[in-house]
Length: 331
Image (cartoon, rainbow, N blue to C red; front, side):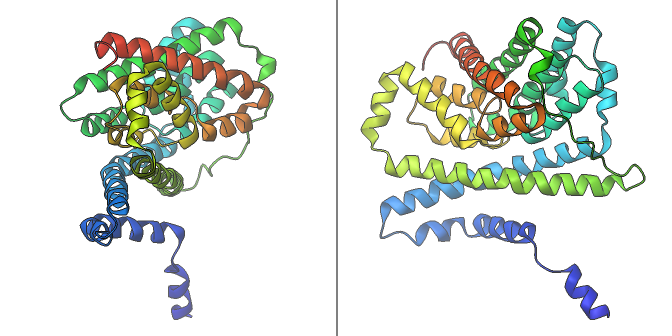
């Protein structure tokens, strides 16, 4: 009986497999690249992939740990009590609260919906949804590490992302309609008598596996962009700033990277100017294919088809303004 239970307890899961692959990539990064010495293109791809993946993972782990702690120990009731009753003021407070309460995009969507159901102004809840994954300390530190010696990128990302969240909140106070939010929130809650540490562990595990899968996709995309895209295309984009901005904005939507890891992918595209890469960093946490699907499920399709395109436009504009103001132009 004891043997059967032990075998059941230690049965490998997807989490174990992912961690083992992560350790292998970290420990044998150089060896993996050397396997392809006869194929320079594959060696470059392996180097870029492992570099992005290994650099971003510590910040991804830190981010999901903080996000899990918030899910387990910080109730939306607390956030609701901190918000002013006046909607326009509540938008400003919710935007700044995003800097103090780190969380990934996936976790911010249900928190925003719970805030609405507890009576928080919808504009404030949506501001928090956009601000929390974009301007929290983990993301800003990761950006500083990804762009060493370029603190202006951190400032520009903070300004552009906060401006996106605040502008969308204030715009929603003007044009938002209650009837657009049609989906009902799930009433599934954690057992109040259960262990908060179990909630923490499950939330962190779920976020880590989900965000990790997108990090693998992002690292693979960065490697592919280095190897498969001819250099003349990057030269052309570097000379066509508007086209480069549009391409990077759309790439952010499609890749759907975790905000704790996207800076390393952007930094790897050093052949492009800083401004298009800043647009990539501001747009990604605000709107991507993963977020649109989650918003449609949590708020309804009528909401998502209006909110997502508007957020995309606002994020691109705010990123460009922040880029020209902080980065000193289109470099």
